Length: 102
Image (cartoon, rainbow, N blue to C red; front, side):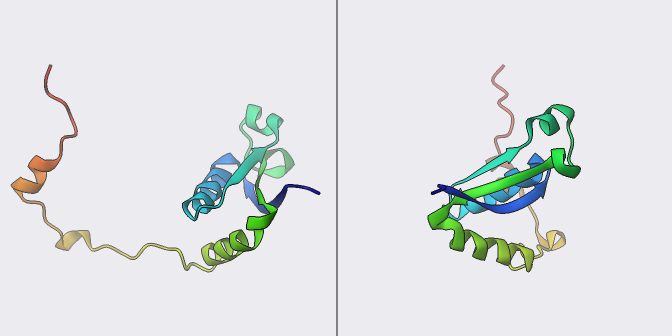
């Protein structure tokens, strides 16, 4: 019996990896594969460009529910009103993006 089952077909590896990360955020391990010729040629359309995401058989139903939520727009982030958010000097000082020790 097969250990993994196809859960999603994508256009290219970027889409497949996005689905894989989504599933893994729900603790569902998955594998993403694309035809090696498609990878070498950088294709994202057609049979060679298609990428597939697989999950373990025991996780298939949970993965289907998550994919359904995604396709129905139930996993979208709420809108954030950036115009009403302010940073003061204390907040800006908390950011240590560049190390100026040189």
